Image 1: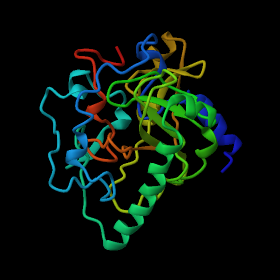
Image 2 (image 1 turned 120 degrees about the horizontal axis):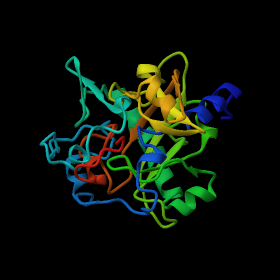
Image 3 (image 1 turned 180 degrees about the vertical axis):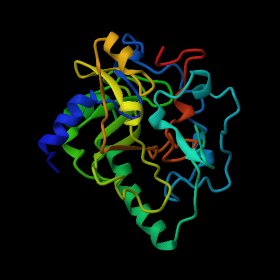
Image 4 (image 1 turned 45 degrees about the horizontal axis):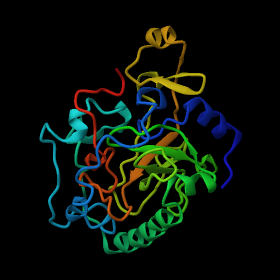
Length: 272
């Protein structure tokens, strides 16, 4: 699906900020994640997404205070916070039961999504397929590669972003992300109620300078201006992660905003 001119402009202004990750705040010299500990065991707590993130009675890593995501500091962006029980929180994504029809539909959707991981197993393959780097590796989110051609609507078989465990040509795919321009509200997306779409439009949006994000939503207009940037609302741009790559099923849920298996850096805040 080709994107409209308004979407193209929004994406340029957006600076290709994906899933809360930003180019300017991570170590530009790093081609690999800080830690991938736990990746081999993450699948024990999930059913790969066929159950829409239902962990099937397995072990779920909660907010213990010492998960890599918590140790790396606050979430990369307010927009990545899950909302549950009336307050914002990070951690395991809340799950609601699916109907049989929703489950059948989700199985098909996730089969299409997993096929993308086979098609683009590495950064080199993604770049050959038209995806371009939009962030460096960011703890708990990964390195994002974007193909804005697919941002005009939701299609499980054509995610607009691919997530990798680094930025080297041989870096491996670890997840998918769907960035969709949807002015009428969050896209219908995956079958069932558990795909929690997020935005980056609170507090006037992100601080962007020359197409690159230099501050999160919590940055004031004045501070943004001091950095040489402008606040951009990004209304109508919605995102959801999909941790469905075999071997990288996220213990916080298939649609969680962050995945602790992707590691973090203790005491380092991406927005410092």
